[in-house]
Length: 114
Image (tube, rainbow, N blue to C red; front, side, top):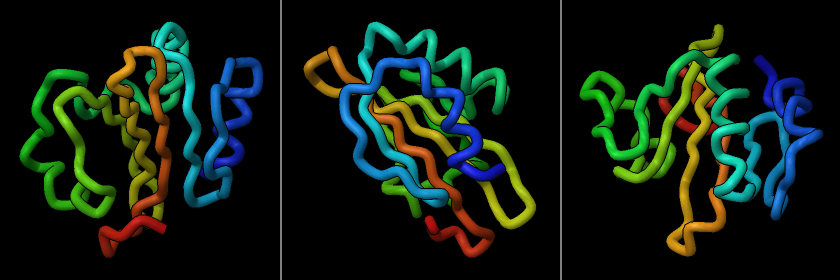
């Protein structure tokens, strides 16, 4: 999956801030009130989250997620294996309760983000 092809699905959604829009890293900020809409898109593409908000990260996922800066308890993680690694998406809620950073990246088999 190429990130910029998948992110075209976001064209009709509200985005607060665009930070990085490349084929290897996609980072934006969206509004917390729209989280369910965003989650539906990700679940349709990736299936259920690898880690739901409030749940611990499964032990068998620990080895590669550290390359992305780790994952906190209040974050949600989606992922899909591709030919050369995994595509992940993290929902990172802000402390203000109004915004969520979405970070999507490709992690290659050597466990480093591209």
